[in-house]
Length: 424
Image (cartoon, rainbow, N blue to C red; front, side, top):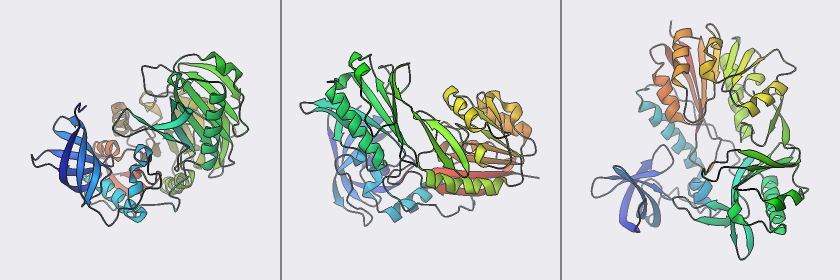
């Protein structure tokens, strides 16, 4: 961390890079990755980090303004969750497509036929899951987000990315915590999730047991709440122990004809309309082939396809929901990590993969190389690790479909789907 405030004057900004910042070059020749700037702008930059050979910074004064710059919808908090609120929405789609192309080309994957980047028309209020922090002051307990690049927080009343019922429930929960005089320093984070039927459930993570919470009264805007003790040494919302439960934290949504049960902590897609566009593409690509779905979460992808033979998932909570979701089907549910279920990789069918941001385990890559399924259909929330993994299979497979999706408008995040077909 940079201990002393450092301002660099009149930095020319070049282009967006993977991660969402804009890159610029300092007079020293060193690179700086900048938030709150846009390509082709000139800005004064406050340095917030020094990492090896490059800096990270925040544009604090725009000297030359891009034609694509717009006013953010959440002026005080957009940098926390959606730093591309300053970018014209049409320009956002073009920027994400350019990042996706460059990411794959950096791994030597060139001459690919990229399909036009897919956007939904909904820029805001699309998230069915939102995480909030807390901040206490002389006004009481407030919802809050961390300010990007700092350890400071900004008070909020909700998020413009989240469904309105999520924001309403979060405020009601905050008010109930205020009624109980709960101190903000004992709280960690709040996760709120909603279904298409606008039922809302929540998980509250706390750093230590708070006895007053035994008297918590569930607001009418919430179907259920679980309160978890979570290790205060970690910033992540990780369950250590379930301390209190109120109501029911399970939700059900119909996705591509399948009823999917999940709960507040399940792996389940955040933007369902965009996800269903992806499922249509996966259906078309896998048509006629038996399917194995690895990293399956609660089974949403595999159970929406006609020819799925088995789904593989390691998380116990997810697998319990997958068993419920697959109960009326012939799909086999495998409770194992993908790297320990390599025998299920099909030789003649299609392997569907939707791994976490870290990408595929090296043993899964090795398993694919040995089994050589007819098709590998790879959905990713991190094109960088996806490109790395595809390169490791490039001598066996050719890319015959690649599509980017804007699951997370007004943010830099990109979802991409790649289909690999075995080379004869």
